[in-house]
Length: 332
Image 1 (cartoon, rainbow, N blue to C red):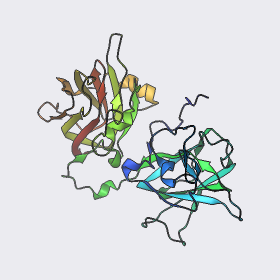
Image 2 (cartoon, rainbow, N blue to C red):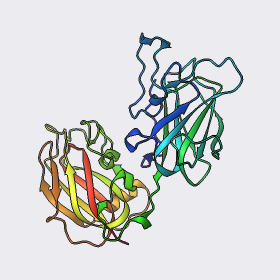
Image 3 (cartoon, rainbow, N blue to C red):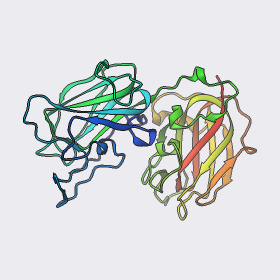
Image 4 (cartoon, helix red, strand yellow):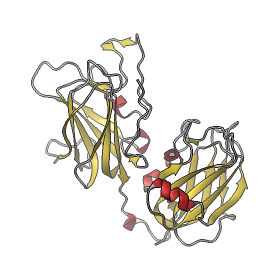
């Protein structure tokens, strides 16, 4: 069965990803499959013939068969408070053991595990599920949330839960003279679109920390036609950039030969429409040579500019970049 289906929340951040600090902090039961796998960033897999002491090994969260009234649930603490647009409930490879229904709630709490008196709001009402399936559902409540609770009725297994939205940051607490990475995921930066994401997603460019391997970056296929590859990203806040870091960590035989960056204060429309606009954006960093497996720091080459909000990273002709950092001060 093919699972190559379009994600309606593409371009938004998975607020439940572990590299942001997210964690599954509680589950009523995870007898068959550990709750931590519920937010594993890797795609779920099925390994025929793999068993552990409790039964068939499954790549996800799975509770035992419930023999008493009630239902099971798991709580995810988001790595950063955020506004949620929607969810993916993924039951891949769970066939005779998936839950027939599920719901999702959210709360705001400073505790790792919300206390018993926490106020939970319905984000997704009880909805039907299918086995071996991926389902995207809209969040039906606005607000900023710190935790989500996935309830399954009555029991069973879910491979993955993705929580798509935007990180909430109180910019009023940032001093006018403070320099920070305005493109960082934790500062609300995000990837919008790239012409090619064959080996690695554009959102990895904004991820926290250093890339762990080549898979933890943005990488295009080998280009066999004229032209070059590009990615468009949005800063978390408009600002004036004083330092640019292009990190090609782990990319050795496949790093780009050169790169350049264009920038704009504004962009509008769909990702595809923004991509067309970006072709004419002014140059922020002129075309410059890159090295393999190297952290390139650029300061002197940055062109004078007013505050920017969007950038287009051009790589020549193709290849992989681990991280892109745009450090600067806030601007309006």
